[in-house]
Image (cartoon, rainbow, N blue to C red; front, side):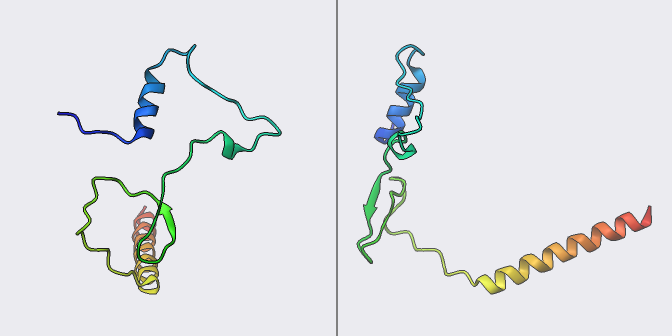
Amino acid sequence: PTTPQPPTTQRAIATAEAPATTMDVRAPSATQPIIDILPPLAVQRSPINGTSSTAAPESASEDTPAAPPVDISELSRQVYAEIKRRIAIEWERDRRF
């Protein structure tokens, strides 16, 4: 059985399968803002803090734990150390030739 698809996916599939003569293609004009041309995003309110965000995929489970917070300082140190290590390896490799 096929799973139901969100309306935007169904619209994209229908548009992709439609003949070129029936496609609704609107080119932006100098007076028309780009926001009027793009399709609207699905926005939902978060029950925790009331802020809006783009809708999550429907396949996501409600009981999945949230990702642990990331320490940006530690992550940047790890990235810097890895880049420094790779540069040292490349430098040694080039020095041998």
